[in-house]
Length: 341
Ligand code: SF4
Ligand code: SF4
Image (cartoon, rainbow, N blue to C red; front, top):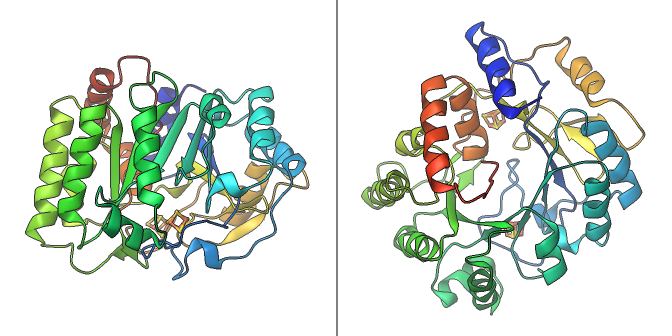
Protein backbone atom coordinates (compact mmCIF):
# COMPACT_ATOMS: atom_id res chain seq x y z
CA UNK A 1 0.00 0.00 0.00
CA UNK A 2 1.32 3.47 -0.86
CA UNK A 3 2.57 5.41 2.20
CA UNK A 4 0.07 8.23 1.52
CA UNK A 5 -2.78 5.72 1.69
CA UNK A 6 -1.33 4.28 4.89
CA UNK A 7 -1.32 7.75 6.43
CA UNK A 8 -4.97 8.17 5.44
CA UNK A 9 -5.88 4.87 7.12
CA UNK A 10 -4.01 5.81 10.31
CA UNK A 11 -5.56 9.27 10.29
CA UNK A 12 -9.06 7.91 9.74
CA UNK A 13 -8.67 5.47 12.61
CA UNK A 14 -7.16 8.13 14.88
CA UNK A 15 -10.20 10.31 14.19
CA UNK A 16 -12.31 7.42 15.48
CA UNK A 17 -10.10 7.10 18.57
CA UNK A 18 -8.43 3.90 17.32
CA UNK A 19 -4.98 2.88 16.22
CA UNK A 20 -3.76 -0.16 14.39
CA UNK A 21 -0.43 -1.95 14.23
CA UNK A 22 -1.15 -2.84 10.60
CA UNK A 23 0.15 -0.81 7.63
CA UNK A 24 3.62 0.06 9.05
CA UNK A 25 5.77 2.58 7.21
CA UNK A 26 8.90 0.54 7.75
CA UNK A 27 10.68 -2.17 9.72
CA UNK A 28 13.60 -1.30 11.97
CA UNK A 29 16.18 -4.02 12.68
CA UNK A 30 18.57 -3.76 15.62
CA UNK A 31 21.06 -6.16 14.03
CA UNK A 32 23.32 -6.07 17.08
CA UNK A 33 23.57 -4.26 20.39
CA UNK A 34 27.39 -4.28 20.21
CA UNK A 35 29.11 -0.99 19.51
CA UNK A 36 32.63 0.31 18.97
CA UNK A 37 31.81 3.59 20.76
CA UNK A 38 30.72 4.24 24.34
CA UNK A 39 28.74 7.48 24.03
CA UNK A 40 27.98 9.04 27.37
CA UNK A 41 24.35 9.64 26.44
CA UNK A 42 23.65 6.17 24.96
CA UNK A 43 20.27 5.11 26.28
CA UNK A 44 17.95 2.34 25.14
CA UNK A 45 15.03 3.61 27.21
CA UNK A 46 15.24 1.23 30.15
CA UNK A 47 18.16 2.92 31.88
CA UNK A 48 20.75 0.93 29.91
CA UNK A 49 23.18 1.76 27.10
CA UNK A 50 23.08 -0.42 23.97
CA UNK A 51 26.54 -1.96 24.43
CA UNK A 52 25.54 -3.16 27.91
CA UNK A 53 22.69 -5.28 26.52
CA UNK A 54 23.32 -8.82 25.48
CA UNK A 55 21.18 -10.67 22.99
CA UNK A 56 21.76 -13.61 20.70
CA UNK A 57 22.21 -12.38 17.14
CA UNK A 58 20.30 -14.01 14.32
CA UNK A 59 22.42 -15.28 11.45
CA UNK A 60 21.56 -13.80 8.02
CA UNK A 61 19.30 -16.81 7.25
CA UNK A 62 17.24 -15.91 10.32
CA UNK A 63 16.88 -12.32 9.16
CA UNK A 64 15.86 -13.63 5.72
CA UNK A 65 12.90 -15.36 7.36
CA UNK A 66 12.00 -12.20 9.29
CA UNK A 67 12.27 -10.08 6.14
CA UNK A 68 10.08 -12.47 4.16
CA UNK A 69 7.38 -12.12 6.85
CA UNK A 70 7.68 -8.33 6.97
CA UNK A 71 7.94 -7.62 3.23
CA UNK A 72 4.17 -7.94 2.47
CA UNK A 73 3.62 -5.08 4.94
CA UNK A 74 6.35 -2.63 3.90
CA UNK A 75 9.23 -2.25 1.45
CA UNK A 76 11.21 0.08 3.75
CA UNK A 77 13.95 -1.40 5.92
CA UNK A 78 15.94 0.54 8.52
CA UNK A 79 19.16 -1.16 9.66
CA UNK A 80 20.53 -0.09 12.99
CA UNK A 81 22.17 -1.17 16.26
CA UNK A 82 24.34 -0.76 18.43
CA UNK A 83 26.67 -0.37 15.48
CA UNK A 84 25.11 -2.46 12.68
CA UNK A 85 28.38 -2.69 10.73
CA UNK A 86 29.78 -4.84 13.57
CA UNK A 87 27.21 -7.48 12.57
CA UNK A 88 29.23 -9.91 10.44
CA UNK A 89 26.37 -10.75 8.06
CA UNK A 90 25.50 -7.14 7.24
CA UNK A 91 26.25 -7.42 3.51
CA UNK A 92 24.25 -10.64 3.26
CA UNK A 93 21.22 -9.04 4.95
CA UNK A 94 21.38 -6.14 2.47
CA UNK A 95 21.64 -8.50 -0.52
CA UNK A 96 18.74 -10.62 0.77
CA UNK A 97 16.65 -7.50 1.41
CA UNK A 98 17.09 -6.42 -2.21
CA UNK A 99 16.23 -9.90 -3.47
CA UNK A 100 13.05 -9.82 -1.39
CA UNK A 101 12.03 -6.50 -2.94
CA UNK A 102 12.81 -3.93 -0.24
CA UNK A 103 13.09 -0.76 -2.30
CA UNK A 104 14.47 1.52 0.42
CA UNK A 105 17.27 0.54 2.79
CA UNK A 106 18.60 2.95 5.35
CA UNK A 107 21.62 2.50 7.60
CA UNK A 108 22.05 4.12 11.03
CA UNK A 109 25.75 4.08 11.83
CA UNK A 110 28.45 5.91 13.72
CA UNK A 111 30.34 5.80 10.41
CA UNK A 112 33.63 4.36 11.62
CA UNK A 113 33.32 1.09 9.69
CA UNK A 114 31.74 2.41 6.49
CA UNK A 115 33.19 0.92 3.30
CA UNK A 116 32.56 2.05 -0.30
CA UNK A 117 30.53 -1.04 -1.23
CA UNK A 118 28.24 -0.53 1.77
CA UNK A 119 27.75 3.13 0.88
CA UNK A 120 26.72 2.10 -2.64
CA UNK A 121 24.39 -0.63 -1.40
CA UNK A 122 22.00 1.44 0.71
CA UNK A 123 19.64 4.32 -0.08
CA UNK A 124 20.18 6.45 3.02
CA UNK A 125 22.95 6.73 5.59
CA UNK A 126 22.31 8.32 8.95
CA UNK A 127 25.52 9.24 10.81
CA UNK A 128 25.88 10.54 14.36
CA UNK A 129 27.58 13.90 14.92
CA UNK A 130 27.20 15.92 18.12
CA UNK A 131 29.95 18.53 17.79
CA UNK A 132 32.59 19.70 15.31
CA UNK A 133 35.02 20.18 18.20
CA UNK A 134 37.11 17.04 17.91
CA UNK A 135 38.22 16.94 21.53
CA UNK A 136 34.78 17.53 23.04
CA UNK A 137 33.15 15.10 20.65
CA UNK A 138 35.75 12.36 21.20
CA UNK A 139 35.21 12.74 24.94
CA UNK A 140 31.46 12.45 24.46
CA UNK A 141 31.92 9.31 22.37
CA UNK A 142 34.75 7.98 24.54
CA UNK A 143 37.03 7.31 21.61
CA UNK A 144 40.04 9.35 20.52
CA UNK A 145 40.17 10.18 16.82
CA UNK A 146 36.58 9.08 16.08
CA UNK A 147 35.27 12.57 15.27
CA UNK A 148 38.04 13.35 12.81
CA UNK A 149 37.26 10.16 10.92
CA UNK A 150 33.51 10.84 10.87
CA UNK A 151 34.01 14.41 9.61
CA UNK A 152 36.21 13.08 6.80
CA UNK A 153 33.56 10.54 5.84
CA UNK A 154 30.83 13.18 5.80
CA UNK A 155 32.94 15.41 3.58
CA UNK A 156 33.39 12.48 1.21
CA UNK A 157 29.65 11.76 1.16
CA UNK A 158 28.48 15.35 0.73
CA UNK A 159 27.01 16.14 -2.66
CA UNK A 160 26.26 12.53 -3.63
CA UNK A 161 22.87 11.95 -5.18
CA UNK A 162 22.80 8.41 -3.82
CA UNK A 163 22.61 7.45 -1.02
CA UNK A 164 20.90 10.30 0.86
CA UNK A 165 23.03 11.37 3.80
CA UNK A 166 21.67 12.57 7.11
CA UNK A 167 23.45 13.68 10.26
CA UNK A 168 21.68 12.82 13.47
CA UNK A 169 22.68 14.79 16.56
CA UNK A 170 21.88 14.30 20.20
CA UNK A 171 20.86 17.53 21.94
CA UNK A 172 22.47 17.90 25.37
CA UNK A 173 22.65 20.90 27.68
CA UNK A 174 26.43 20.92 27.07
CA UNK A 175 26.52 20.91 23.24
CA UNK A 176 23.84 23.45 22.27
CA UNK A 177 26.29 25.94 20.70
CA UNK A 178 28.19 23.07 19.08
CA UNK A 179 25.00 21.90 17.38
CA UNK A 180 24.50 25.28 15.76
CA UNK A 181 27.89 24.70 14.13
CA UNK A 182 26.86 21.17 13.13
CA UNK A 183 23.69 22.61 11.56
CA UNK A 184 25.78 25.09 9.56
CA UNK A 185 28.17 22.30 8.53
CA UNK A 186 25.25 20.24 7.18
CA UNK A 187 23.51 23.14 5.43
CA UNK A 188 26.77 24.13 3.72
CA UNK A 189 27.22 20.60 2.37
CA UNK A 190 23.60 19.80 1.48
CA UNK A 191 23.51 17.09 4.15
CA UNK A 192 20.17 16.57 5.88
CA UNK A 193 20.25 17.61 9.53
CA UNK A 194 18.30 15.87 12.23
CA UNK A 195 18.46 16.01 16.02
CA UNK A 196 16.68 14.84 19.11
CA UNK A 197 17.04 15.51 22.82
CA UNK A 198 19.00 13.16 25.04
CA UNK A 199 16.59 11.31 27.29
CA UNK A 200 16.66 10.20 30.89
CA UNK A 201 14.17 7.39 30.97
CA UNK A 202 11.66 8.60 28.43
CA UNK A 203 11.73 12.31 29.24
CA UNK A 204 14.32 14.93 28.20
CA UNK A 205 17.44 15.23 30.33
CA UNK A 206 17.50 18.06 32.86
CA UNK A 207 18.84 21.35 31.57
CA UNK A 208 16.99 21.56 28.25
CA UNK A 209 13.46 22.67 29.22
CA UNK A 210 13.40 26.46 29.52
CA UNK A 211 17.07 26.79 28.49
CA UNK A 212 17.34 29.88 26.21
CA UNK A 213 20.21 28.29 24.27
CA UNK A 214 18.01 25.28 23.52
CA UNK A 215 15.25 27.59 22.27
CA UNK A 216 17.77 29.44 20.15
CA UNK A 217 19.05 26.22 18.58
CA UNK A 218 15.53 25.03 17.75
CA UNK A 219 14.73 28.48 16.36
CA UNK A 220 17.72 28.26 14.03
CA UNK A 221 16.72 24.76 12.90
CA UNK A 222 13.19 26.00 12.18
CA UNK A 223 14.50 28.97 10.22
CA UNK A 224 16.70 26.69 8.12
CA UNK A 225 13.77 24.40 7.46
CA UNK A 226 11.55 27.28 6.43
CA UNK A 227 14.30 28.51 4.12
CA UNK A 228 14.09 25.20 2.26
CA UNK A 229 17.19 23.54 3.74
CA UNK A 230 17.28 19.82 4.32
CA UNK A 231 16.03 19.41 7.86
CA UNK A 232 14.44 16.15 8.96
CA UNK A 233 11.28 16.07 11.09
CA UNK A 234 8.38 18.41 10.46
CA UNK A 235 7.87 22.09 11.19
CA UNK A 236 5.18 20.93 13.63
CA UNK A 237 7.78 18.85 15.53
CA UNK A 238 10.34 21.66 15.78
CA UNK A 239 7.70 24.16 16.86
CA UNK A 240 6.39 21.85 19.55
CA UNK A 241 9.69 20.41 20.80
CA UNK A 242 10.74 23.17 23.24
CA UNK A 243 7.47 22.62 25.17
CA UNK A 244 8.03 18.84 25.37
CA UNK A 245 4.29 18.34 25.00
CA UNK A 246 2.34 15.23 25.85
CA UNK A 247 0.95 13.49 22.75
CA UNK A 248 -0.88 10.31 21.83
CA UNK A 249 1.88 7.96 20.78
CA UNK A 250 1.46 5.72 17.68
CA UNK A 251 4.53 3.58 18.30
CA UNK A 252 3.79 0.83 15.78
CA UNK A 253 3.87 3.00 12.68
CA UNK A 254 7.29 1.35 12.37
CA UNK A 255 7.84 -2.24 13.54
CA UNK A 256 11.05 -2.73 15.49
CA UNK A 257 13.02 -5.96 15.92
CA UNK A 258 15.72 -6.99 18.42
CA UNK A 259 18.93 -8.78 17.36
CA UNK A 260 17.31 -12.18 17.96
CA UNK A 261 14.41 -11.33 15.58
CA UNK A 262 11.88 -10.69 18.32
CA UNK A 263 9.28 -8.00 17.80
CA UNK A 264 9.19 -5.07 20.24
CA UNK A 265 5.78 -4.12 21.60
CA UNK A 266 4.66 -1.44 21.73
CA UNK A 267 7.97 0.39 21.19
CA UNK A 268 11.72 0.25 21.52
CA UNK A 269 11.79 2.61 24.50
CA UNK A 270 9.87 0.24 26.77
CA UNK A 271 11.90 -2.61 25.28
CA UNK A 272 9.39 -5.45 25.76
CA UNK A 273 9.20 -8.23 23.20
CA UNK A 274 6.31 -10.44 22.09
CA UNK A 275 8.02 -13.30 20.26
CA UNK A 276 10.37 -13.87 17.38
CA UNK A 277 9.64 -14.09 13.66
CA UNK A 278 12.79 -16.14 13.09
CA UNK A 279 10.82 -19.39 13.34
CA UNK A 280 8.34 -18.24 10.68
CA UNK A 281 5.66 -16.60 12.89
CA UNK A 282 3.37 -14.02 11.30
CA UNK A 283 3.94 -10.49 12.71
CA UNK A 284 0.24 -9.57 12.57
CA UNK A 285 -0.65 -12.73 14.54
CA UNK A 286 1.91 -11.83 17.22
CA UNK A 287 0.67 -8.25 17.39
CA UNK A 288 -3.00 -9.26 17.48
CA UNK A 289 -2.30 -11.64 20.35
CA UNK A 290 -0.33 -9.00 22.26
CA UNK A 291 -2.99 -6.33 21.70
CA UNK A 292 -5.93 -8.67 22.36
CA UNK A 293 -7.54 -7.69 19.03
CA UNK A 294 -7.08 -5.67 15.85
CA UNK A 295 -6.51 -2.34 17.62
CA UNK A 296 -4.27 -1.32 20.49
CA UNK A 297 -3.41 1.56 22.76
CA UNK A 298 0.12 2.38 23.81
CA UNK A 299 -1.24 3.67 27.12
CA UNK A 300 2.27 4.12 28.47
CA UNK A 301 1.77 7.51 30.10
CA UNK A 302 5.04 8.69 28.56
CA UNK A 303 5.74 11.22 25.82
CA UNK A 304 9.15 10.43 24.33
CA UNK A 305 10.15 13.61 22.47
CA UNK A 306 12.07 11.83 19.71
CA UNK A 307 10.99 12.65 16.18
CA UNK A 308 10.68 8.96 15.23
CA UNK A 309 7.85 8.67 17.78
CA UNK A 310 6.59 12.17 18.52
CA UNK A 311 6.68 13.57 15.00
CA UNK A 312 5.09 10.62 13.22
CA UNK A 313 2.43 10.31 15.95
CA UNK A 314 1.52 13.99 15.82
CA UNK A 315 1.43 14.03 12.01
CA UNK A 316 -1.05 11.16 12.03
CA UNK A 317 -3.35 13.37 14.09
CA UNK A 318 -2.68 16.60 12.17
CA UNK A 319 -3.53 16.23 8.49
CA UNK A 320 -2.79 19.90 7.73
CA UNK A 321 0.68 19.68 9.29
CA UNK A 322 1.29 16.57 7.24
CA UNK A 323 0.24 18.35 4.05
CA UNK A 324 2.49 21.30 4.86
CA UNK A 325 5.38 18.95 5.59
CA UNK A 326 4.85 17.29 2.21
CA UNK A 327 5.30 20.67 0.53
CA UNK A 328 8.51 21.40 2.51
CA UNK A 329 9.92 18.06 1.51
CA UNK A 330 9.07 18.54 -2.13
CA UNK A 331 11.13 21.71 -1.97
CA UNK A 332 14.05 20.43 0.08
CA UNK A 333 14.34 16.90 -1.35
CA UNK A 334 13.30 17.58 -4.93
CA UNK A 335 16.47 16.22 -6.51
CA UNK A 336 15.41 12.62 -6.15
CA UNK A 337 16.47 12.23 -2.51
CA UNK A 338 14.20 10.20 -0.31
CA UNK A 339 14.31 10.14 3.47
CA UNK A 340 12.04 8.21 5.73
CA UNK A 341 11.63 10.69 8.57
S1 SF4 B 1 27.16 4.95 18.64
FE1 SF4 B 1 25.00 4.73 19.24
S2 SF4 B 1 24.82 2.62 20.02
FE2 SF4 B 1 27.01 3.15 20.00
S3 SF4 B 1 27.43 3.89 22.08
FE3 SF4 B 1 26.98 5.68 20.76
S4 SF4 B 1 24.77 6.03 21.03
FE4 SF4 B 1 25.21 3.96 21.79
S1 SF4 C 1 5.60 7.60 24.29
FE1 SF4 C 1 5.65 6.08 22.64
S2 SF4 C 1 7.80 5.59 22.40
FE2 SF4 C 1 7.59 6.56 24.42
S3 SF4 C 1 7.31 4.87 25.88
FE3 SF4 C 1 5.28 5.54 25.20
S4 SF4 C 1 4.74 4.20 23.46
FE4 SF4 C 1 6.94 4.08 23.81
